[in-house]
Length: 239
Image (cartoon, rainbow, N blue to C red):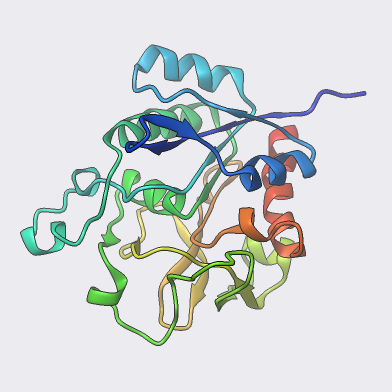
């Protein structure tokens, strides 16, 4: 039996409990797609991050706190006031991880905060708070149960995501208040919501670098498109 590709999963951080943790959906999604998920330690030590990147076949950048405004050079005090809790440790770790992934051409999948982190780290910008800065009728901040879709996105034709899930309307589970504003150089949209928010990105120059704003980890048990996203990551890790 061939070995499963190892997918390094960025940990979730709970400052109140002084702990690291993980939602099982991230791990189950990777496992069911044929991968072996391993939750990484939280570290911003360059040598340790480089070693970790050399031990895995792919990376999964998970959800979590807001991306720190310093990551993308946000100076406006009013906009900075709209930023919620941040994780400077994750910001630093993900900068190093993404750099290592690009250098090694490791497959990367970002989810929720993951799309925001990838975009910000590669030179894009973010909306700090959609209800304040980009109000619309689209409900981006769903309520429990999170495995129920709350809005739809338009998967763009002629994108890798469309190859996997089909072009056109896709119902998604959504829970976020920040989002991609200006797309980073080198990235391209794969899906948008009805109010114009970029909901999925990819990097054509990479073997596999995808990021989605919605939550396939909540819906993978019942939704084929969510499973297809995890399968795309694991398939790339095998490659």
